[in-house]
Image 1 (cartoon, rainbow, N blue to C red):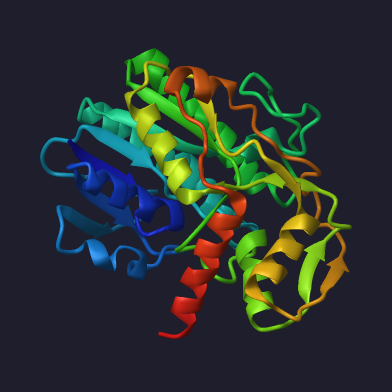
Image 2: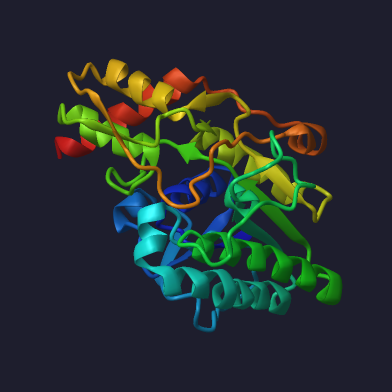
Length: 310
């Protein structure tokens, strides 16, 4: 197939491009490099891959046939979307509209990268796809949460009104190689501090929970969702729930660091707990994660150490 991936030079987008190429697809990547990194896709240049530098909030024009459009463009870390609030809103709204317009024009399938952030600070635990969420629309995180909620609504509007073959993946916390070391998310933040033997900063008292999914598991779930007969959102994430404090201590131990943990106030609207109910993924996709947390952390540490020596 010939597949368009927006946000192709990002953390998840680049792994997705690589996996599509590995199975024999041709990939047209789109990225304006606002938060993406050309280095993430540099190794793909000699394959059936092209990268178009373009802002998807502007009209998207692709020559030739397209079988699928995978919309992954968006700032995705708290630092990014707090520093780029308007760009985050625009890519979730205008960018999604343009990506859906491309899928409609090309009679292509469409996959939206949504997020567990649509659940906000959840009052239901674990979170199933039927849960509508507990989101503060005017809080600082609302620019990301509401952009993704709007994107989901628009995606299903195109499905219902235009008959576009749409899929929605709600991505839970994902980690692995090609994350930016200082992008503000827990795993790379802890690793960057631990590798320098600096204090490891935990926000809140460390008791808030997350469920961390390794990148290869996530991508495998996305590929299965592309072929699934459903337009309903599907959670893709690892249901193994750990506290932020446990992750910080694990990173310090695996790095072999002398860092100590220091605590800072919890950011506004930061979720207290997060764990996916993956019953739908198990049932519809016959998917569940296989990479052990410690193995995934070791792979990620290895990547960051290699980057540091370049």
